[in-house]
Structures are given as C-alpha cells and as structure tokens.
Image (cartoon, rainbow over all chains, first blue to last red; front, side, top):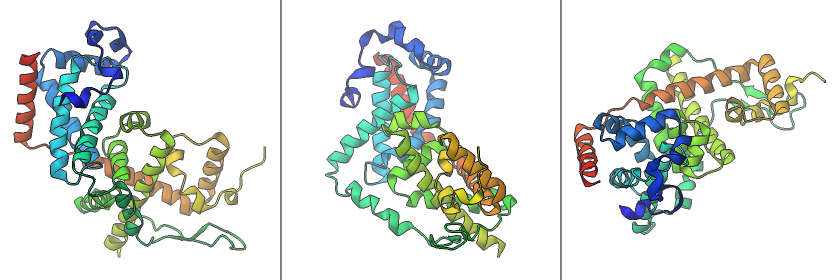
Length: 232
Length: 85
C-alpha cells in the first residue's frame, strides 16, 4: 500500500541507499537491511518470524478482529518492502516497521467506521479487574497505614513452568485493554526495550510504563490466583 | 542523611512503582526508599519476586511458530519485491 508509507519524513528520501544516515543504525540493523536489499530470503523469513505475531497483536488495537488484524499485517509487510529501499535509518528498523503497521491499521480501523470506539474498549479495564487475593491496611490504620493486611503467599516456583500457567497468562493478556496488551506484548513477550516501544507506538515513556505496570499487575494477579489453586 | 524506615513508603505505594523501579526510572531518593523497604518487608520482597517471575513466564509466550502457508505467501511478496525493484 503506497499510502501506508507516504507519511513523509524519515522513509521518503530516494538517496538514502547511498549510506549517510543509515550509518547511525545499529550494526545489526545495518547488516540486516543490506541482506534484505540483496534479496536474502532467509533474512526476510527471520524478520517475519520475529515480528509477525507482535504486529498482529498491535494491529488488533485498531481493528475489530484478529482476522482483520492479520490482513492489516500482510498489507504492512508489502508497505515495509516498498519502503525498504528508501529507508534512511533515522530510527531503529523495528520501530520504523511498526509505524508503517500502525498507519495501515489506522486506515483500516477508519474504514471499519469505528464501530467499536476506543473509549468503549478502555472501559473494559474496570470490568476485568478481579478481587485481589492480597489486601492492604486502610490509610487511617494507626500503626501501618497502607501496609499489607494480607501479604502475598509464597509461590512454588517449580509450578510456574507448567503449561497451565502459560495458558492462564495468555488468557489474561487477551482480556487486557488493547493499549495495555500491545505494550506488555512488546516489552515482556517480545522483550523490546522501553525506548523502542515508545518509538514504535508513538507514546511517552511515562505513559508506556503506566500501561505496562497495569498489565503486569493484572497478569501477576491471575498467576497468583492460579498458584493458590494448585497449592490448595 | 537519615536512614529510610520501612514506613517511609507504604506497601500499597511500593507495588505501584515496581515497573519504574525495575526500569531504573525512579529518582535516587525513591529508589533508596524502595530498596530499604524491600530489605525489611518480607511481603513486598515476595511481591517483587513474583512480579519478576511473572515477567519471566510471560516472556515464554513468544515461542510460537507461524503457519507455513503464511510464510510462503510473504516470501512470494518478498520475491516479487526483489524482481520489481
């Protein structure tokens, strides 16, 4: 989709292939781009394998279903390939790819006539909130205000390797509000660093951390619920 | 400099800033408060341990394969791009 890459700025200049700005990229990104430009299919497949799933999860923030998100990601890959020859490397390759993806997803989201407004999805946050196993003393507690009333029970770490624990975590992440889901996907599932996530999603570090913290808190709580079940 | 006491920061507040703590995004004063609190409060120490364990287990969700058919169709797009450029 040509429109997907015509956002101006970083990936437009036709002379980028001459080098110049590209030299500011990491050595890893630089080598990868060279391999892609020379038609290395192995390099392309590795890129797809590493990024396709997180791209789908991010796209789902803007469209109504996983099926549509898959289509958006396919479009994005075409846009990425079209832009690759002109990519100047002013930001990391991955962040650039995700910006193209988000452009595609926003366009598709717009075409879907916004049947599900983002604000409506936001409200799911409260509904998903479960009663915590742990609790705190009230703020007017005479001795230890805001300290543990019921501190967390110890987990049996060996059980965390169970596939059931993973199933529980995945289910909880799927239930998160989309903006929390995309941040925890990139930070904790895909192991991106904070700066890269902010560049790709166009959000501030502080905002990103708030979303990540809420998401992690929910996932830990789900895991605590599971740990309590298997040890009781 | 006075020694931080566990009550300088409440457990309820501490659990809200753990992501900032783990990212190294807290100012020095807050970070010291958190560290001192963790030494003396077994509940929060356990919570932090679980928080880290959660991140570790979440990481394992990335081990997923893509359907062959999808890889093939993307590879086609790549070949097409090569020949078109």
